[in-house]
Image 1 (cartoon, rainbow, N blue to C red):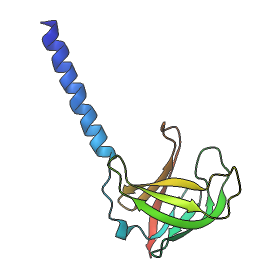
Image 2 (cartoon, one colour):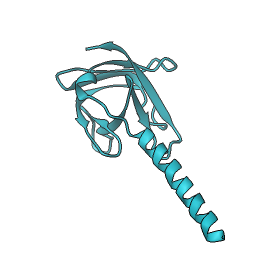
Image 3 (tube, rainbow, N blue to C red):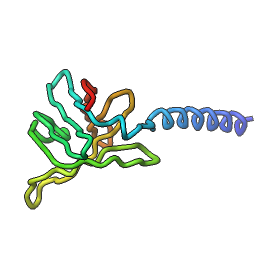
Amino acid sequence: MSKGIVGRWFVAVLGAASVLISGCAYSVDPDELPGMYRNGKTGGEITLDSDGTFTATDLSTDAHTDPEDLHGHWDFVDSSGSDFVYLDIEERGIGEVSGVQLYARGGGKVEFSEPDGSWSLVLTKVSDQ
């Protein structure tokens, strides 16, 4: 009897986990990415240009950096786990982070986030390129 209950709970948990995981993977059309994105709370913005360059103003890319202005090149990475935009930041010195991932969330949203979910900065598309 207890094996049946455990089995049903296992199936229920497995089903719930698969729904949650599938909800985290967003399908993004890379042709729709170019444009300006802004966070209404911080005012930080990033513009992804259709020529593969980007500029960012007053933007924090993680929980431990102050807002800064950045520029460089971007590439879309179609990943089975979660699509993201790789930002190759120009003019960085030795020991400085020169690349970060900007996660494509669909619905005109992109996000910087910590892997453990403790911090994120969501930017919403405000204009097309």
